[in-house]
Length: 148
Image 1: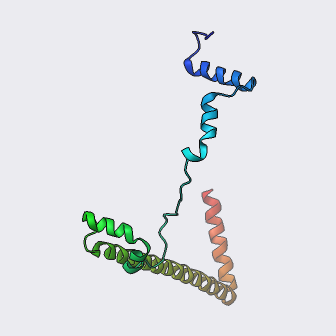
Image 2: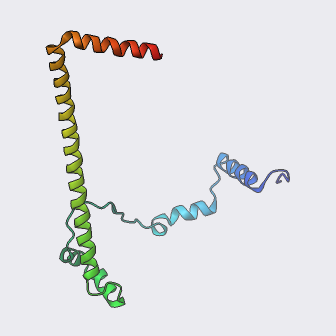
């Protein structure tokens, strides 16, 4: 008998646990297991991440002729210019992304070269004027210690 102080979710959970312990097969579960392949067809998935592959209008027409025909019949595709413009925009975005990557890597290389050059200048200055370098370091150490 159901306990009126427990919620219906708790009562259902307890009933399911009792059924599992007694190895009783629920008719609904048995029916689902018997019809599983027919009730849950396999679906095909594709990655939707854009990549740098050149998708020209002619290659897309070859790949999806029925889709394009259906879109043209409803007037959603128009004369194909929208698809060509979208393909052109994709190519432009890909080129801009590549150029930005090249600029960033060039900036990192230039920064690295400038840092190495600055280190070499400091090393040369220390070699040329060692007492001045020791004095500058001592002054910085005194200021740092005084502010702490």
